Image (cartoon, rainbow, N blue to C red):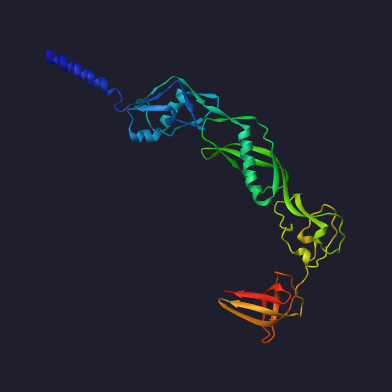
Length: 324
């Protein structure tokens, strides 16, 4: 009798156990959770019990949609999570969901001072201006005092790599989080740039000889940072008997295109040519077949064999050719 009773109990237990899932896993989520990323990923809000690695890999990265904006909240239904797990090919009797019918998802926020962005942009502009100006002024008009962003590490980045220029311009600056652009600002900037240059003391008429006494070397505001025509202080232009190509008003900057650089060699001039080939230096007389200014390359002709080649003008009596 006792044995029959034991067999009956064992049979009932087998029947009951056969109706239960043998490999069911549990998904546990708190009623309220916080996320950092822009998307709500299941692994970031859930804890898994009794789950195999292969199944975990299958459902770990389930995307539950975009996260709320920083400082805000969003609701997710239990039914949605159940549906997304089923879509991975996992039957409902293989898992249980241990959380309320609706969970609240929040995203932590922090406030970024607008001055932080303004100071960053001003520092980056100053780095560039320091290399090609003698003095400058920068005004950054960041119009937002505070910006709400996710409570995460961030970087600031100037976009589009625009060339700086004096005057008013707008520069795009982005907040970068996890390698992605989170927010972009178009920030008005005003730049004043100054360089040292020779400035006319008085009105100087076209055709006048350049005289150092007619100019003063001082700091002056410029409208082009890349202006390579401004004359440097140690110039020898005043000692070359050069004439102005057009008139200058008082206060005008003397530039390289304000005057006519004289030709050092004219067509038909007989000049010495220095030819350097490796470690060997040769010297011969040639005839100029073009006129040229200092530093220019002109065609010259060997007087003996009539061979023509190009040489660099060094002085009124000398041209030079260098071959490797």
